[in-house]
Length: 219
Image (cartoon, rainbow, N blue to C red):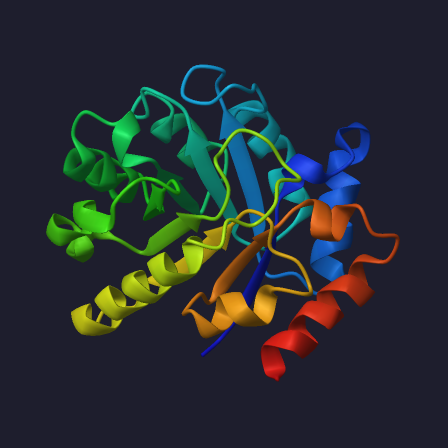
């Protein structure tokens, strides 16, 4: 299984965001994870399409936009135009999950569905054929730097079982509290894509931190 490290720019230094994006990708990361919060769906306000467009020239790596907003559909075309490669959203934030997934794909992006700690995986029963990514939240969304919620592990195992049964090439991403000392257990539960914010950006040497994560994944 190929593993992907996706640093969350939520924990980066926003005063020099382009430089941070370039640095973390050159340090060995695979994806830029871009957290969008609207102060409605979650109790925080972060960044929008203008910032996505601003960082796009700084990297060739995929930009993985996680929409913690409600409603969703209005912003999908804007982020696609701003250079997003993957757009994921929470099913509770869309009136028509199937339609939103199709909207994302119609705009040339890969489509993902995000599950909060207390959101059941039942939504997957009807839309596996439209998914490129499933994101399991291992914290409640809204803020960086939270601790990993252990109940995410059985949820990851169940999501992995569903992906394998579907026979489709769907990434299984995890977001929240992932760090060097738990990334191996998270991978063993079935995740292949790991969002890490403060675990990378709060360290003095991004390359060493990412290398330590990869060493754990290789064990």
